[in-house]
Amino acid sequence: MKTRLLVLILLMACRPATIPPAAADRPDEKTAVEAVLRQWYVAINTHDSAGVAAPLLPAFFIFEDTTRIERDDLIQAIVGGFKAGSQTAEMSAFRTEVRGNVAWTSFRNDEVWTPTTGKPDSLHFLESVVFEKQNGRWMIERYHATKINRTLTP
Image 1 (cartoon, rainbow, N blue to C red):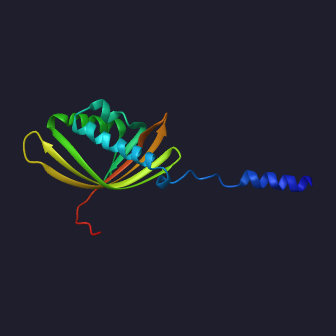
Image 2 (cartoon, rainbow, N blue to C red; image 1 turned 120 degrees about the horizontal axis):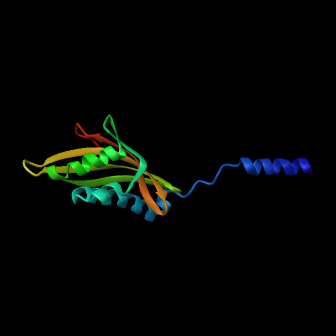
Image 3 (cartoon, rainbow, N blue to C red; image 1 turned 135 degrees about the vertical axis):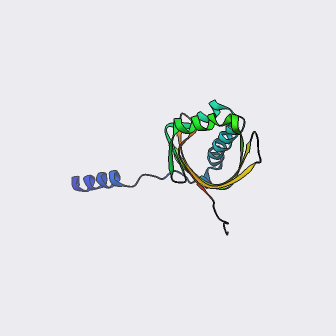
């Protein structure tokens, strides 16, 4: 009897953890994750330096194509560019997943950079972002943006 009880206890201790529900089961969380990105780009467009820094975790970094940029360097570059012009972003085709306090999304980002002097420039990216939920807020942990240099076929 003791052997059976010991085996049962060991089996229970070794069972896999329950996986949190998928994003499809939690549309409110998917919407919240995507809203963080949309608000971040609004902050960039409206030259809101506090809004640019707010959703980025201390360990944040971005890969812009093949260049790694640390959190503070990215904030400095964005805020330093406010005088040079403004940027808008049209994000689409989100593929967002939420697992507990971690989420990730991939999407297309069509941006327009409008310099204070000169013509607007259209830029197109494929991007992926990793989030962590801290104190009830989704925060950006990692970011990867790759510029589209060719026509994509569906």
